[in-house]
Image (cartoon, rainbow over all chains, first blue to last red; front, side):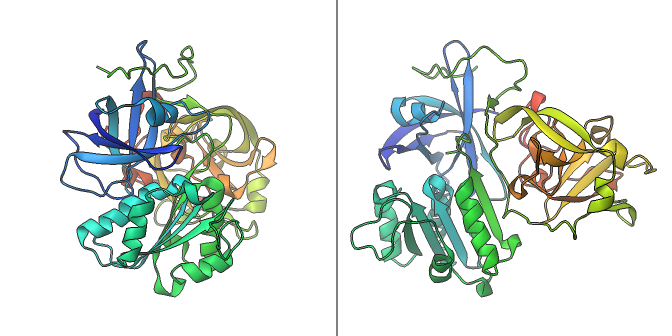
Length: 242
Length: 199
């Protein structure tokens, strides 16, 4: 069943990513980590749909946010990031997915690991932790290409300052000035220093491009985390996810 | 009635009769798994068919690979909307594996290393519709794509083609597997667009 959402706000996160706030009168609510299918239809009837993670926390309001990264040869993401204007309507199906989800009833420590736009569903979890009043201890390890690639920059800084989530950034291409490490992929040292130890039995949520998730989830397994406690969501070069 | 997206033309290619509704064609092979990639040593691998109470058939890697294998060319369709045409696999047909199994069961639950499961009607596993595949495009199947061996049921959405498969439980009644308990359709026919449990 396709629902109709109206774009009520658009905000740039980076030069290639934009957050869409949608008002959906019959939105049934969602859980943090779920996604929606978005469908575009051309005047000749041709349509294309893709899945995008929901960025906003569950709330009683009939609103949700998705953050979309423009893919160079994407079919739907260039439209959503460049053409769409406030007042436009989109078709949505969802919310979808019951596995890559965090619920406020969970009390165990939470380890979030994001690569690039993989931050989006994890941001919904952090926001949900805040809005639900949960005191579950959260950590986020967030890997991006360069400082300018960070989504939700001010909000994350603010959440870290308030002690709601402990955040470690990592950079694969270019680091900020005076950063102590060279750019590179997440490695065993970073996992050991910046994430919950396996002895605390955290639930780990890992989201990002396939190679990122393969690397990070492999490192978690090697450092003693049970595979049962590692939930993953991968997107490929043509996956056009988010 | 669809809403027209102002200024959207998309790829608008002529409709491809090989492409199920709501899918698009990809040429690479995205990886989708609920957890970390499993690495199963061949000397520990086995495939067991059971009826819920006892094992009916059991193979280790060697006895499995001694079975006659087939080459299969198939289009595959992922519920995340990509389809990939003309993929080449090598595997053992479920017709071969279930040949001497006498059962009244109508459903099967495939089980995987790592705990994944998915349910299928037994009908859908017979008559050259399903294989346990161990080679992809001429190469041993890579762990991230389900190696050493995965179920291959190309006529259903690809989450039914369980990676790292280790066995199958024959069941009198249908029961939901992993994704089927997490929002996805109990059967998953791409041509009827049976993506989610709400439809």
